Image (cartoon, rainbow, N blue to C red; front, top):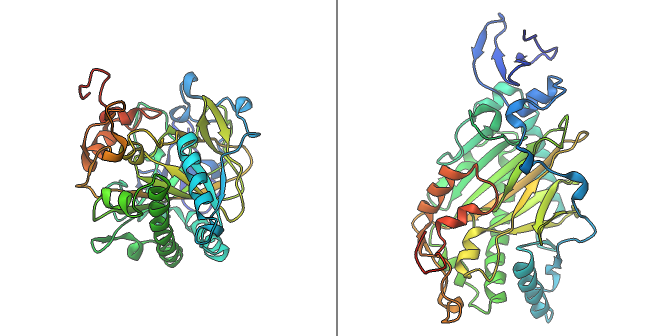
Length: 379
C-alpha cells in the first residue's frame, strides 16, 4: 500500500509502479499524473522501477567504458587569424572519425553559461505543480515539460526529466512563454547559441571545401532550434538503466552544455568512450542530416547518457534542425560514379515522422528511413 511522502509538496508515491500522483490539501487525489523522475527519487525510492529497467543487451556495462581516449578538443581562438586552416582541418578530422568534438574559446562567456545552468537548476527545484503547468508533448509545443515517467510504453524509459523550448525565427518563440525562473536566461543563452550555430554551419561547410553558407542553405530557410534542459537525478542502480538510450540525433547538429558530473558517452570503434567535461567547453554532436548531406563523409555520432548513484547531472542540448519542408539529400560534391548516393532525397518533416514512430529503437536505425539499399533501391 502506498504511503504519503514526508515532503510537504503533496506527493504520493506508489511503490509498486514507481508512479506518483498529486494530492490536494484534503488528502484526495487532484491529478493522476506523474510530476517527474525527480519526485520519484526525492520520495526515497531504493530500487529501479520495472519500467526503467533495460533489456540485458542495452544495459550499460560501466566497467568497460573507456576514458583514456578522448574526443578532440578544438580551440576556436584562431578561427579568424592565420590559424584558421588548422582549425578547419581539426574539424574535418573530428567529423570524419568521431562525429563529435568539444570546442573552447567559442565566443560565449562563462558567465552566460553559468547563469543558464543555475536557472535551469531553479526550474527543477520548483514545486511539482508549477512544473506540471508546462507538461505537454515536446513535438509541436512551444514549451514542454516532459517526463518519461508520464508515458505508457513497452520499452524501457529513460532516467530523466526534460524542459524543452522551440524557436523558429518569425514563427515560434517558446522562450517568451517559458517558466519565469529560467525564461530570461534561456532567451539570452539561445541568442548567443544561435550566433554560434551560424559559425558552426560556416566552419563545417568550409571544412568540406564548400562555400561557407552551403550547409545552412541546404537545410532550408526556416531552420529551427529546440533547446532541451535535461535533469538526471541519482539512480539506485546505474547498471540497470540509462539517462538517455543510445541514439544519434535527427538534427543537423547539436550544441551541448553539460555540468561537471559526467555521464555522456560516445561510440567510437565499437567502444563506449566516457566524455570528460571541460569547464567552459561546448560539445558538438553531428546529426543524421549532416551524414545525409555529406553522403556519409561526416558521421552522426551514436551516444548515450549513463546515470550515477550520488549526483544529479544536468545538460542543455540545442538541436539545430532543418526547415520542416526542406528536402535533405546528398550534395552533388559528395556523389560520384565510384561513390553513388547512399541516401534518397527526404523531406525533413517525413524523417521526423519516421523517428516519432520508431524512436524506441536504439542506435542509428532511423537513418534506414533515408538509406538506399546495395542494389540501388530505396528501402
